[in-house]
Length: 479
Image 1 (cartoon, helix red, strand yellow):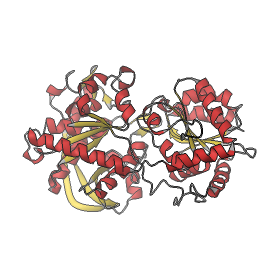
Image 2: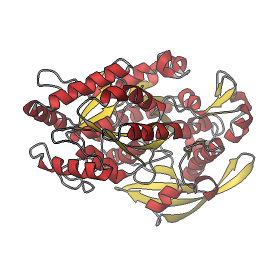
Image 3: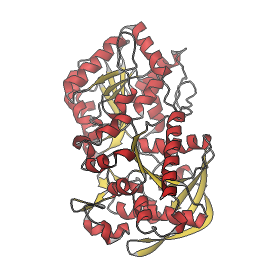
């Protein structure tokens, strides 16, 4: 398993959750799994005692030979290997600052991808399958098809590539192609060239043995122009190799009955602790609400994808709804300013903390009554799944994994509320509907019980991955 992030070592979003949880679930099913990550500053802070393996790999990168120390740690029984190169990874952020991406991201992750392959050889471990995730690791299938095509060490190694978000493709100017380390022949429209630029995600889609994405609905959406981000044609051509596998949840971490990060634990049978969490949440965010007023929570990267433009348009309507809104997140500077503006304009309705804070994330999930996710698109989404377990009823836009995981409330059934139209009115109307049901105590309690009974644990999804790995490996053996 190769990823640019994985909890608890380094995380910016859902990819980090998946890469931290899936290897553990695979190990429980009997797979021999190892996880490769960059040794970021964040990883060094979480895991300062990562042990030197004694291995050093020399990686051809951007016209020079760059050496990396290989470190080792463990996560729930899964061995974790880090590539340590401070020049590339000893930075405050993983991919860039709020002002933009790091200028050398192609070089950084080309080094990481090729470094993983060299580390596997140095370690003496020939994998049956290398599972790559997102554009940061997409050069691995390309390297195996190109640079390592005659290397018998990887002759029986299959690749599986997972798209966690089509919008993030790793696009770079043509002048940087040399840093990728690929043959010149691959820089064509049939290869990794994309409208004159280098597209790393395209490499993963073209050269991996199998492709997965993180929900069934999203796997269909990305084959259409509106969600395919310019690569829908490739995905339609590879439809037989494209699979939607819903992300699972680590309920050892996300379960209010055993959550060590919240002020009071609770369960579907005894919800008393949720009110304590609610009071602490309001205190933490400095928001004062009248008794009987629900709290609507949001935890998100502050980006266009997550619907913050729509939230701003709906704010005048939401300000008239009897509810308070708490927002936790960090991201693009303009959206940080947008959220701060909402709090300034509606100080009795909106409160926010611009931060990435795991403790606060757990508190928002536990202390909110409603969870809002108005995403323009959402490959899977994790917070709506966490919210279900915490009895925090999701209000979501019906797209991608949000559509797959939330059952609309109707006649006492369902687990949440969904709207389809990308309009401020649709968002505000659905929040009003949720607030109206909240005021009906028995109906709301029933909705909470429905939500908390849902099970999105990793076991089912991990079994699907095991089947895909087996099929991909057998396909390599036949070639």
